[in-house]
Amino acid sequence: MAVEIIMPKMGMGMEEGTVVEWLKQKGDSVKKGESVVSISSDKIEKELEAPEEGVLIDIEADVDDVVPIGQPLGYIGAPGEAVSSPAASAPAPEKKQEDQVVEVPEVASDPEPLKGEEPRLRVSPAARRLAKIKNVDLATVTGTGPMGRITKADVAAAQVKKAQQPAEAAKSAPTPVPVSSLSNGTAKKVTGMRKVISDRMFNSLQTTAQLTLQTTVDVTELIAFQKKAREAYQINDEVRLTITDFIAKAAINALLEHKAMNSIYEGDTITTFDTVHLGVAVALDEGLVVPVIKDADKKSLSAVSREIRKASKQARGSELNKLQLSGSTFTITSLGTYGVGFFTPVINPPEVGILGVGTISEQPVYVGDELKKRSLMPLSLTFDHRAVDGAPAAAFLATVKQNLEAPFKLVL
Image (cartoon, rainbow, N blue to C red):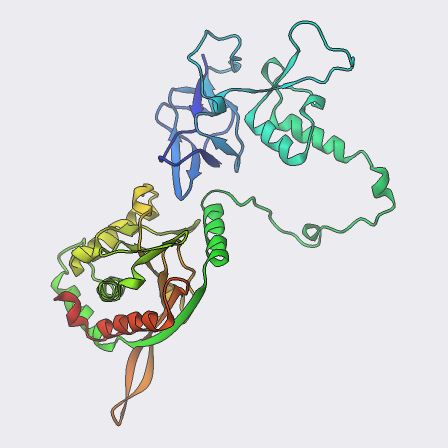
């Protein structure tokens, strides 16, 4: 009997997941425990393993489909086996409402009510979603799936047929030329991590009063201090003491002194924290994640370095859970490795501030009356003006600068 590949629940707040990629195709043989399909939810991506050995006999959800938890993504069974219909199988425990097959009454040609039970259509979740998007009446679609079940392909075919029927009102209207037909391009639906980032950043700019302050830090002494510190930790693979580690520690210490920046703004309430939970943005090929260093103010420079290094490694291996990606009170983000100087980072709601770090460059600077070559680093602080005024935000940024220009303070 065919075994279902189910959309799992990967977090307490998860209600649905997105199919990212099928690693096996219909008809392929699979071994138990072998990765079959890649899925994502919120900012977590995971590969699902085959629950049994056999053949991937059916795929219910295509790439980019959004599927509720508990719904089947596909089926594994014996070669040539058909997917059993629920009606033919033995009675099973009552399923949740979202797990049940959606049934739509057929439209009867006779205006008088029918006697007995009205015939019903069987519709797959993917077909139902596509029909809703394309405004296709499911009662007009012929199902080609098991037991006459309407599949996504059936709805797509019906939509094409509907589009080929010319409307009288459209005959006299000029036909616009789609932009996509003017050049060769690849269209991709916004889903998964990209969709989450898109929604959060749009919401951030729409619901907050963001203002960015900028300053330049002389990190000549910091670079020299960092080199000496790294030599002291050269035998420790977990502690590398990067410039990012020092920036994080400088921000943590400044947040303890300027607590207004260590706040969140929700509804009509501003909550200020005594403890710093620092978010450190990590860039991935598919987007950006922000692992959180909890209770960062209680950790030494080397401990902060160790946690940042560990979180970055887990992020790139898609090993972070939702708890590790939530609860931050302030965030730092860097574009220094891309040669970017000043920029305007976007606040990660409900936080009220984010510190952007640019690339370090060597420039001639007057030190007293003498012109010297110094290493300068740009900082960009974006803050929510609803929660923090310009003066306290500027004072916070000045303290970060002072901490970085006197790096020995960061190890005390």
